[in-house]
Length: 196
Image (cartoon, rainbow, N blue to C red; front, side, top):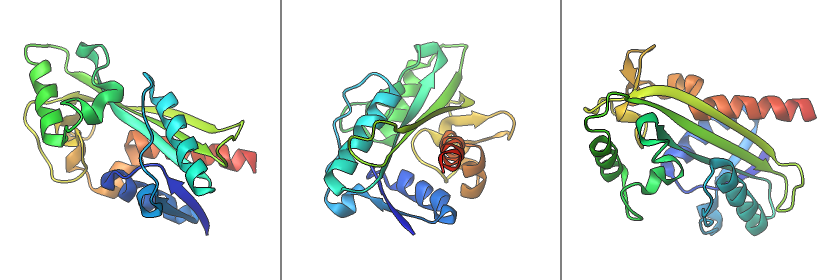
């Protein structure tokens, strides 16, 4: 089983990645278990932040590292909250505060379209000259009332017209099949296999 450092301490992300990567024989170790602090995320794009996080975790651990930078982009808000999704309501923002701010900002908007973005970066070492990079999107609508107990982040407000439910109403296995993160991981694994 290959060890891989996950450059995240987000419990929801850790759980999703462990479930998605277990069948591929990867042992996912959250960076916090190795005493690695979170990296700075000063960039304006998901890809740049994910790359910074992956290189940071690999440098500190000496192991291959996987990082994702993900968030939600509301079309009526010119892509906000975007890379600021986790801190939309401020540095001490939490899911409740972030969702409240998003609903407030969308008040009176007719376009409720939004998409989740996931940028995944896998590096074999800190200075890997050929990081694997994937970016995917998952489309939905922002609704005013939350539904569902699964998922995290903006999931209770992210309505999927095809499934006729929010992301938080999906079973975890179903979410992993269609989510931005699930899509990105499948694409990443395809790239890994083509390199082998």
